[in-house]
Amino acid sequence: MKTSGKKIFTFGPVPSRRLGRSLGIDFVPFKTCTYDCIYCQLGRTTNKTMERREYFPVDAVLKETEKKLRKIERPDYITLSGSGEPTLHSRIGDIISGIKEFSDVPVAVLTNGSLLWDGEVRDLISAADLVIPSLDAGSEEMFLRVNRPHSGILFKKMIKGLRLFREQFKGDIWLEVFITGGVTDTESEILEIKRLVDYIAPERVQLNTAVRTPAEKYAGLVDKKRMDEFSAFFGRHCEVIADYANVHNLSEFSSTREDVLSLIRLRPCSIDDISAGLGLHRNETVKYVQELVDKKLIRIEERYGKKLYSGYQTEKINNRRKDKKK
Ligand code: SF4
Image (cartoon, rainbow, N blue to C red):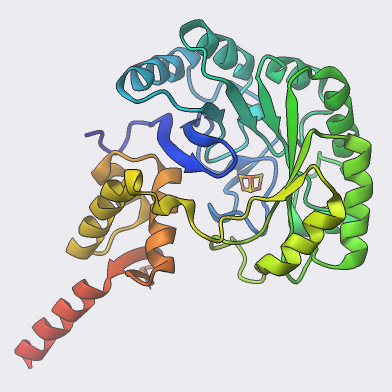
């Protein structure tokens, strides 16, 4: 078991509707991002930056990835994503080429696409097999409202970057469009987004919405029926990928979920406590915890300004203890 203090670079394999069994690789510090999206399931961005550097040593990332691959069944994808924006790592290209030296599993990059106007970033991720960038707004006004970008990221420049990458990249581009209920789910905004999608011309368009707890409460969920209508409007190459049915219910993942639940039932824990206690990557922990909250098996409480998760069982036990003391 790994303990706190040491950065864990790999997570999963996690089940993904679009990528099958995906081994996640995370090599940027938690919430180090060019955006601060209102719908982000990891909470508010703590380090909004455009600074590209080697946040973690490439050798360490590759060593752990190779070791992990030896231990698990072959995943469908190795996905560079995680708790921040992966293109902020200045040596992402070396990470992709390094992985390809010991594995033939296709490499996907999940990026917000905000830095693709930079030719160097485009070149670095061109060695991937699949790139999944985001587009969440059809206008500058909505871009500022939904993505809350670093001041150096301009809407038009970002869109141009996506188009330039389309012209350069030989692999597939699946564009993720996150539709935020109460903000971008209007016909006029969807029309604007569609216009930009046509200009960018990705192989696929994947619609998502706030099925997980967003950074801001007002970032709403769009219901499945309406999402299907939007998908039909975007056309044949579009699908809804929002995880309404919760793909994490697959039995393969239930044992870890049970471990998370057992730990929380012992005592209230923060995400970091659970990650450290079970040797899980923070992202993975967030997913399991969210699922347990959705199923009403655990609840969120604020204590000393900290978000803690506790089991209902713990609460009952504590109440019983209090009653005895009376
Ligand atoms: S959703 Fe992605 S791009 Fe947006 S703030 Fe979170 S990590 Fe950054």
